[in-house]
Image (cartoon, rainbow, N blue to C red; front, top):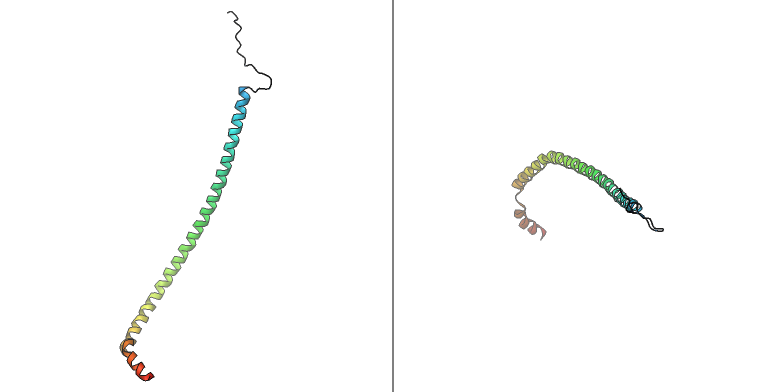
Amino acid sequence: MEDRGVQTDPVVMEGSTTSAENDVEYYSTKAETRRVALAEALEENEKLHLERDTLISEVNTLKSEVNTLKTENSMLKPLADEAEYLAGVLEGLLGSPEDEEPYIRLCEM
């Protein structure tokens, strides 16, 4: 084969950077940018997990309070029914409040 004087090695001029150096800088910058974005995403993820845990705790507390109130309501319902019944009996014995108003007005005169 005959040497035609074709240059195959890259020419490096003084003060310039080669393609390999540009590639390293480019990918280093890109990697750093992605590292920062990942760190921010991880931090946000951690905050969201803590917030989730707090909300789960609050939900459990509220469920417990609801159950307590349901139990209390079931215990007080018979008492309320009995009080309502007794009020009706007393009203029947004493008459309705509308019937008493003229009598009260006459006594005040």
